[in-house]
Image 1: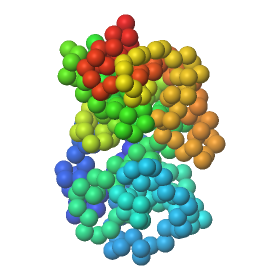
Image 2: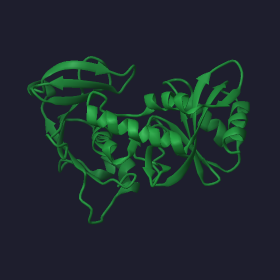
Image 3: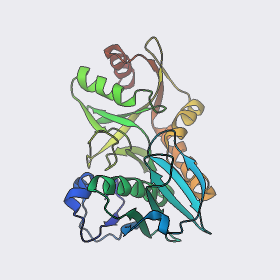
Length: 286
């Protein structure tokens, strides 16, 4: 159960959850609630033996690369390079029962790669209509409230979180790559997840989201509060969604609007130094 939403992962009998699903251990759920979706790992000799359809697009500026394939229905792939998909997700029509195809002989590290990307995709598809957002962010916690740092890849989100951890007493890391945001009764909360990028921070925890900070690199440290329109524009690019699907996009906009109404947004132009952390913390925690 991640941020209150249940899903299931099925591994082939010769793969152990201890080796392949370590990030998911804190989120194990044994209750009665039915999963929103199931991702079943299927092993084949070579992916080239399967007809997943023609490549329509390949997205992302760095790994993992995201592929869309068309064979009458859309399938999805992920890879370490732009050569070809290394694993392919074949969803059911309602996204409830899905197969994740991997080549035989794959090591546990690759299984984790395939499971991680497949479950993030399926989680996004099935929870976006439920006032839930999977965002690209690094999140710190101070005095029981959470602060999410946004920005383009390479901007320094993880670095800024680290500067808080090193210089601001009582700061903790909630997630370093893909936390979950939910709006419940007009209040916004942020959750840890099994997806934390290169930092192994898999916390099954939730905190009220008090501030969102969009980072840009600069030769100085300066922070300013963003008005609603700028906050909306700052937040949208960090939210995962099936942007080609009108219903999902409408749901995304609705939730983003609710977050902007309930959370303070800031723009931080900064250096990667301790002073940037102090400038930011003093503003957003006030």
